[in-house]
Length: 44
Image (tube, rainbow, N blue to C red; front, side, top):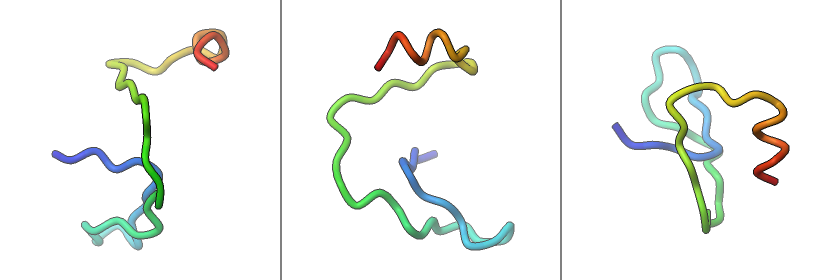
């Protein structure tokens, strides 16, 4: 399944995202769990 950064779907039945991020992402990470606020703040 493709990963879309910064997009959203038009409705619950839509499968194509719109308003996708128009730029590029230089460094991305996918984590297998939700990060805590503390963990996120150490990444930025």
